[in-house]
Image (tube, rainbow, N blue to C red; front, side, top):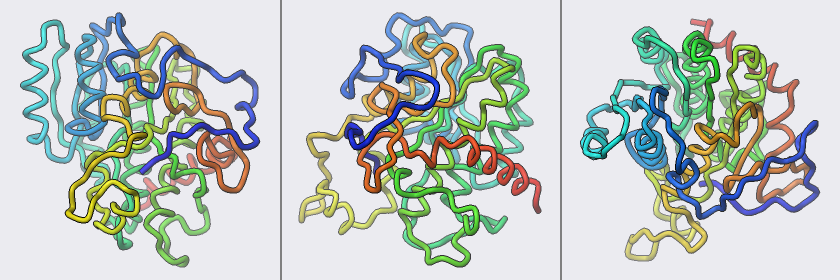
Length: 333
């Protein structure tokens, strides 16, 4: 789960620019942030777009006229969404394509199957807090493999098509869980340190933010990249949490009924910042920044922050080091 409370402890602006503000709030939904925006002729890919935040992102982009590809491990699960959007007047066409981010062969197949310019890539899919350490066939810790390495492989593989679009945007869905989990370059796959579900999740989400900072190397290609924290939202992302953990979060009663707390967002509200970064004119030319509640978040440096973006996640040196690490890792059999 992620946090969407305002950062207030020793905040500092991201170096070199004032924080970007918008007229929207934490309760604005995905459709509202791009109301009046015409995306006809634009092409988008949304990973994990069959449910939850991803589905709301697909709805907003398609209803604005974009052609959207729902990239998901089980394309059949997107069938109801496709039928729904096919009945919406003016909506762009919506397709599905298989994509398992933890399987490099699947990522490669998706990239090989893509043709033509790509205007928007939303790295939305993810897994959270796997209770035990699990590895992909490559020997990578599964949360890091899925949440970061798979998306890195997808973004770099699709780079020629993003460049072809001329003004493409990459959006990475991160989490407030990144705040206390810097990327561990010495032991990223928990081979030596004790495995902790939340440390693994938080590290993978720090990596996602660093990807957007590292993508500044693509600015000359007209490609921008930004990250976000969607806030607290109940979706399938919580599927690996046991009942005791859900009760500790306060969203499950003794009978097993799940109910969001008052500060939780709906999926449509949670997806708003993703859609803002993907398609709003307010983000034209903006890159390498982190947003929550539809506003750019300040960088925080205190020990126990409850919002904002951690300095370790926007450090250009760490971003370049992680880019090199990911590129080398993907080349290693």
